[in-house]
Amino acid sequence: MTPREALLEKIQVQCFALNDLCLFLDTHPANADALAAFQECLQNKQKLCAEFASLYTPLTLEQMGQQEFWSWVNDPWPWQSQAGGTV
Image (cartoon, rainbow, N blue to C red; front, top):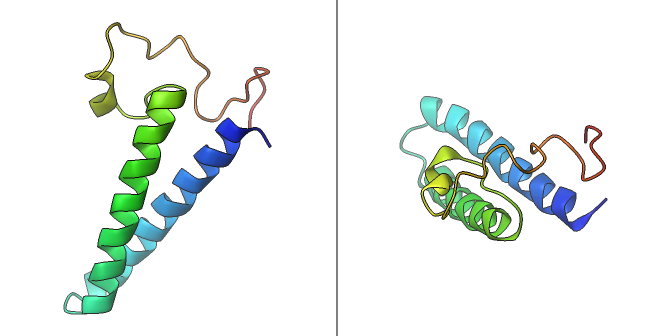
């Protein structure tokens, strides 16, 4: 696994945890521990996405505003490996 793929996997883990916590909070909205875990995962995801964008390419359209030129289609898509295959 390349460093790019490893970082992308860390982002995917945080996204999965956020979705799972969101479902839990839909049925347990007053659970303070779950809300704290959600906030922590959200901060982790944002940090990891910013790191990925600075090292490789933006993952979201919001991150494109930080670029000096429109590079959205120049780099491999997140599901593609550096060699052009799929991850």
